[in-house]
Image 1 (tube, rainbow, N blue to C red):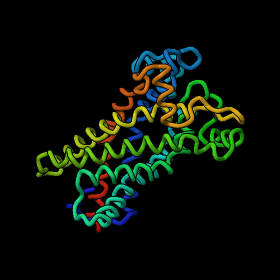
Image 2 (spheres, helix red, strand yellow):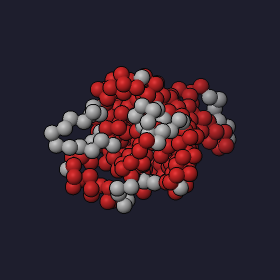
Image 3 (cartoon, one colour):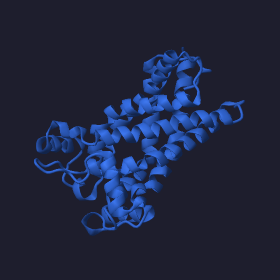
Image 4 (cartoon, rainbow, N blue to C red):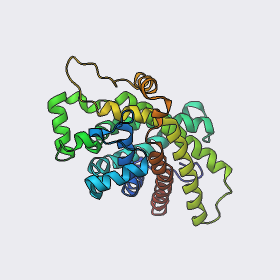
Length: 299
């Protein structure tokens, strides 16, 4: 991601992104479960009549009523997804960066190019993640999660009852979610790194990456949370023939949520989401950079 370092082939970027993604999700996954539960809560009532008043309340009710292991319910799908997802994110960002620099005749990355590259990488990443996200959302939901024995059973039941194309429900909303997050993440990382004092030691470099990645993750989360809220609802809607879903397209769903529940509802789950993707963005950048540096050292 830095033009000052030797560029590595795609395969090294892919593996570095995969390792970074799995590391992040193992640490931060319970926050994702809480985020999804809060986002799926319509109005002030929760699934099966159980309401969550906030992040801590949701954590405590899940542990009390369903057991601590429920905080890792559905983690198989994200683990399987994280390797290709994060690998695609970082590899696509580097490859699209090269493409745009060549296309515009620019030697070094700048702020505008970082935003454009991140947005394009996010769009690329979306096509990889949608089926995994769909399964994860269905498993995380309190109402529907018990219907499935696991990720594979969930996918099979979705295909049987809703058709194979249902595995890509929410693609459009996912595109917007990833375009906005990646544009904010990579764009802000570029600016944050430029403003920081140059690292003189590996420890300082790690700290700089952790800070820059956390700031980038927070910025991306602020931008994309409304799309994430409606994506969760779209993907948790079971398709029925002849019935138009209440939540169907991203912008229409955003207007529906804002009209029925208020603008603040578009930021449901924001606190657990930003707590995950802020520090999580730092973890991603630190592990990715460390892996890339390791691969450079053995070249």
